[in-house]
Every structure is written in structure tokens, then in C-alpha cells.
Amino acid sequence: MKKNVIIFFLFTVTPLYSFAQGETTDLTSTSSNEAFVNAINMYNNAIGRNSLIFTGGVYYDSQKGINGHPFFINDSWGIGTIVYEGQKYDSIEIKYDILRDLLLVKNIDKRGLIWPIQLNSLKVEEFNVMGHHFMNIEEDTLTNFKSGFYDAPSDGDKAEVLIKRRKEIAESQGFGKLEKEYVLNDIWYIKFSQEYYVVKGKNSILKVFADRKNEIKAFLRKNKDKFRNDHEKQLIEVVEYYNSISNNSGS
Image (cartoon, rainbow, N blue to C red; front, side, top):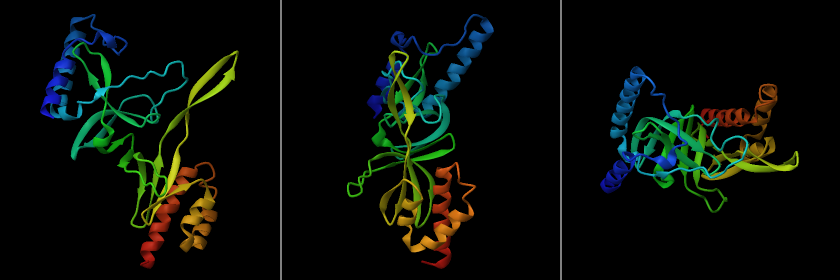
């Protein structure tokens, strides 16, 4: 690990002309230049404290000419925390590529160019960004559950919700040429009794919670207007409701 950190340091202090397309700062005045240098120094001091997490490869998005972006929520850097090889790192600038299931951290070279580092997914245990908590979960071959990062908005004693945030590239014919765009295509799961169930609608939920089917039906009827246009919220609140009535009954 020490060797990797030294190699990374030597790499970052070298001007990265191959990344000239990165973001830059206006250095046309002395005051802005001083402010920029101070900002870089502060950033590098923070990086020094978290240097072990900045040892991955350079991320390069080779997909061109596609409408939209491959990232979770938006293509801006979000401040978050990462648990990497058992060590928690705070105040890290993060992007999550949900097309490739890759977690990126922001780095700035000595010229002020911003370029992303692609972390080793196997070493990332969990992370938080933009109000969402993601966990790295191993595959379950019995239920065809794939390994990767999963959004975990609901965690209960009996059942929990897991969401695979993902995008795909969709193609369509328009104005005499082939159009491509990133399309969101999340997959919802309920983890129950150590098994993973894909949720595609109300019937899927009722099938998983067959032991509380009548109570769940009543809860859905009571809240049908609330959930009319937000099926993800419906799933989360139904699972939380199931956990509450199961705990209250002592089952």
C-alpha cells in the first residue's frame, strides 16, 4: 500500500497535459492567483489526510455523443463519506457512475485541472452521497442477485429495501440519425428472511409479505393517493410498516 501511495504522489505532481479538457481556474489577476494557490494548498492538505483512498486508476468516459450523463442524480460532485478497506473517509467529493457501477473521487493536479480517480469497488464497503446510503453487497447465486453497490433507504429487523441504481444507453431513430441517451432503469428489491425479491409492483410486495397480506392491503388502500405517483416511496413505507407491525406483535 505504501508503494501505491508514493507512485500516486509522483503521478499527480506531474503536469497532466493529456487531461487538458479538465476544469481550470482563471489566473488573470494576482489576487485570483493567490486565492487559487491557497485553495490548492488547502485541498492538498486534506488529500494528504485521506491519501490512501486516492490510489485508484484514472476514470475516463469513452462514451461520446450520448444525451445526458451516466451519474447518480446529476453530474456534479457531491460531498460524502466512504468506508474504504475498513477506514472511514469524510468530506470526500464523490460521483457515482451508475452505468458502470463505479465510485469516483475528485482530484486536482498542480495545474488546477480536475480529473476523477476510479476506486477499486471491491475495497469500498459503503458510502453516503446526496442523502443516500449505498452498501457494497455480494451476489446471491440462488436468487440471481448481482454483487455491487445498492441504495439502502430502509433498514429493519425483519425486512429492508435495496435499490440498484442504474442507467442504460437507449437508442432511437430521429432526424435522419441514430440518437442515444442515458435512461434510468432502477431495480427494486426487498430483502426478507435472508433472500432477495425483485419488486415490480403491489402484487410483488403482497407475495413477499404473505403473512401480513390483509394489513398490507389495508395500508395501501389508506395511502393510495399518497403513493399514486411515487412507487419507490410506497415500497419504502410499506416495508417500514411491515417491520413496525411485526415488531409490535413480537413475531
